[in-house]
Image (cartoon, rainbow, N blue to C red; front, side, top):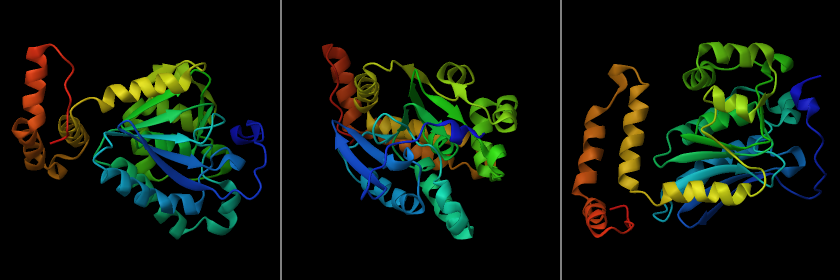
Amino acid sequence: MSNLEKIPPQAETDGYTPHIRTEVREGVGWMIFANPKRRNAVTYTMWRQIPAALADLAGDPDVRVVALRGEGAASFISGADISEFATRRSTEYDRVGTEANLAIVNFPKPTVAVAQTWCVGGGVATALGCDLRIAAQNTRFAVPAARLGLGYRYSGIKALTEVVGPANAREIFFTARQYTAEEALSMGLINRILPVEGFDAAADEYLAQIASNAPLTMQAAKQAIRAVGQDPDQRDLSAIDAAIQACFDSDDYAEGRAAFAEKRPPVFKGR
């Protein structure tokens, strides 16, 4: 029996069309994977919606950080929608999925995967595209590709290996087993475990801490950190230097110094 088959069935939601939904609240842009009938499995149409949804959030000056989560508490993402594989699994399907993942990886603002209950297969891949990953205590993680006969592209293997290391990546793929939140934390797959009770409030607090910081500083840091993992000939150090200089030239830099001197919280504007 595969890990996916062990997930209890979700209640039917007749007439509901799976989709990507976005919301903006207090500096946090939410991208929500809404497919509750299949525990937020991602359909072909949902993959296609992701780049446009992220483009809208990138262009919104009120958005300081983007959080990805599944609808409700039943699952983050239980993987790609396997029911479509017989008819949709093709070069076109892979292209759309790759474009969606690249849109997440290349997003200019900080991104956080907010996981509950299940994070499986494509859910793990999507979470790995984010800068940070937080999860409820009861979250289970798995990449059951070896139980489904699926092949993973190099980019997906590389992303996992960079985060958890080669030994853990091998075990995750070779055993296809489920991992607890504690195990995920110990291997670096997630950054923090949050309590099940009060999870939403704890996640909001975590995201608010990021949203309150200087946007230009975070964007410059994100560029530099990304460059560390690139081949030297791919690093655009001049762009990183320009991003750093933009921080020093910004009103936010003046605000940060003034707030420090006045012993008050800074109010950053992103300019």
